[in-house]
Image 1 (tube, helix red, strand yellow):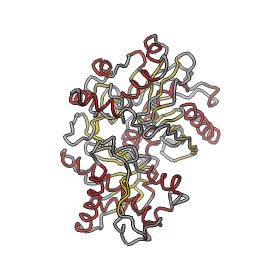
Image 2: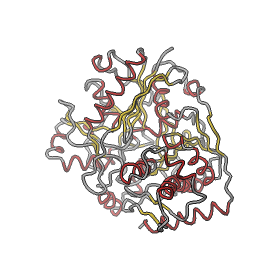
Image 3: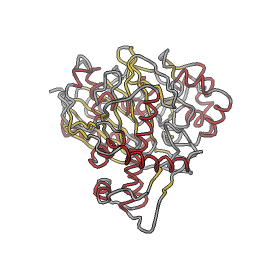
Image 4: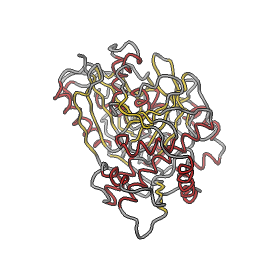
Length: 487
């Protein structure tokens, strides 16, 4: 058997998983790292901590299994890191995708009439979610950074690029097309960095990585890191990797990942569909120079809301407890949580919105809070699917993954809210599996993605059982709550 190693570097933890050629999990390791909140709306990571936890979990699984023929990397996408090319040391903390510090800059660009051009070229909106304004902020707010960048001393990267740089000992400065498509600097039609966008965001091209295919040659790891030189053959942003891992290769197939945030991607093939309802046009993957596109809806806070219940409020000791708490109630008792902790994503795109809980009474307790938190994930997904339907895409089924997809109560409620079946795979680690598939494709183990995806199997199908009247009543309560925090 030819084993494949996947690094899944996420927002709250770093993971490593080794898959067999047939898709079986042979070893897994995971380690959480700090979330840094310097100011309200600011979210940072220590890039050195990301690196150390990534190396630690990767070594752990390699020592357990041994032989690995190729490595794939998947990552939190829009998080921005800048480092010294000579030393490899970051010049500041990484600015996380959830960070809202550049909301004013984005508003200024919108007021200046730049939104239409940005969206036409990049498929994205002017929002602090994306990397472009984060790069500008680092160059303008870290002492000497802009001058050093002009002198060719600094390198920028999303997390995949930073890990590739470190894993190869600084020999490779590269990203893949999916990650590049999340920067506000990448022209989807030309499939390259766009000079107009670089000028608009004041980003020197010299700091940017080379853009490669999602299955490509990204160099080899230093022998002293993992005991041998392992070729890096696959790279994709986490949501695109999940699309691959869910075998969504046909136009119209949709996956929704429930991790820290929630991200629904629909494969649109070779067509660049432009949303009229604030969804994103983005890369699905690029193979052999041929781009495949997707339409995406992004929810900033999903699983992170459950983490908030656990870590900040102490309502539960583990995320799994929320399922029993939610099931203990016959209904939500009128309690709604709008988890706009870092603003609202699609289809609202309100960077200034903040979280709120509505409908609290003296009877409100842990069960009501847990249920409202879980329900908020499904309501936000409904908003995304409604926007997709208005853009002409109406999925008849949805494939789910991510940690929260293990919650049966939540998946049933999701099916009820969407009014379509929800299909969960046997292996919900589809993000890492997608990275492994791409690595196997790049290494020649799989002749095509369809061969790799033949390992995909369904674990459960949740079919809608709620009446239209009950669904409408619940959604009306949600929409009223959202109106109170938007604008």
